[in-house]
Length: 266
Image (cartoon, rainbow, N blue to C red; front, top):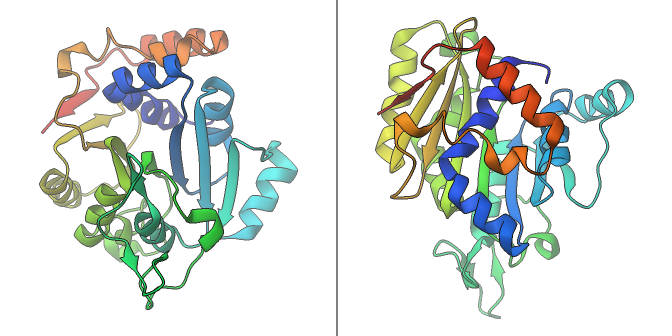
């Protein structure tokens, strides 16, 4: 992996390990959305190690996609797709078309003909044909830089941690859904503010602080039930290790290099 915080992001999958294992055992699909492509290393890694994962990446800049393809070997297939779109708008649009247990999401708007469409004041980056009847998102990862230094965050852009967007995310996620944010800030006040907002929206909130980095990875859970904090090491990545033997050694090495207490619950 390109960065240790990527491994930190993946470690949060243990918070929904029971759900991931049940999906794998039944041959169903786990639906993931990653906002921010970068070099494409994180989605490619997940794609290779989790055969049950259906990944959609949202990237604002088409040049970034071209660079990922040309210099890092990024390639799409039936399980890995890229949308060139605004991440905020994409998530809002997905919310309107999400379904749970075969039923329309409560925020869908039905027109006179009986078809479901997004609010008229929102432009679509997800086509109606593509989005209609799509399942809710199981894992949503925010990994984008901020161009506004006044926000006190290098990552993500402030809009991605506004309360209104966090509520939209919760509506988009499945009942077992997991929201992951890569937060980069040197300001304790900014970190506390983001934690407070997420704690108000999600049923459970956890953080992982990397010793050698300023990255803090935040994990918001929709489920009422989750792993206890002291069970994280024992739950280490079973759902990823099984389908990908090369991952097992990588995870073991990473955990040996990070012997500190990484996790905190709120």
